[in-house]
Length: 293
Image (cartoon, rainbow, N blue to C red):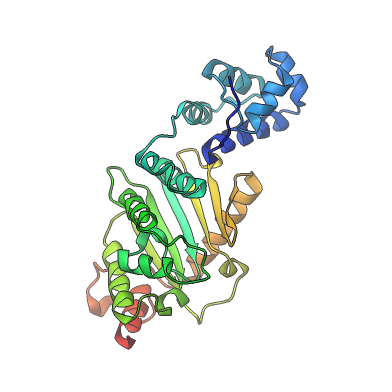
């Protein structure tokens, strides 16, 4: 089989996991390849995502590495057999690989945990708010209706059949920055409140008055599939996304998000009667900002 010229995050993540299992088993690449009658170069190409691995071979590798967790093995098989095709395929020639990777990860996960320090998360943005962000010089976003259309399409994951649970911690700064002007911000904040009505969406605000923490300096999304060990953390950096999938990083960002959620205000809950709301919860803060606009 020919080598891939473009490697998706799913393909890279599968190869990374197979390499992790091999190293955990204490096997060198050449040794593992020899034991299943595979060339060392071919195994290396599988581990770097450059080529596919057939399901029987994948199961052989899992057996060799002592991976007996059936759910884990079947998740790896599903990753290997996935075509990578979805609604985002129509944008393949128009959107960046990072954008396509993000859409595929969101579509395949059971949970999303995200932190944003300056902007409302993309999955929660109104069209006017997103358009204003794309039009702001220096932020690094593409200025096109195609980019806006893609972002709006991504949001369907929130209301699809069997949607992922989505938990976001948003810094108070994001409520105050006026992308697009007062009316656009007002519409955006009201939209946040409406999204919180969805049973699978949890929104918390991290106020200026809360304890400072290193996690506040970076935006990240933790995409968690059915087997959490196969999750991916997406770090938003000026030059694009960085993907982390090693156990140490997954554990670190799980801990960072736990800290943020424990120290943020109570989640937006529109089901409670007004008199039962604490004066210091996320809904009260959003409503306060709305009042000041």
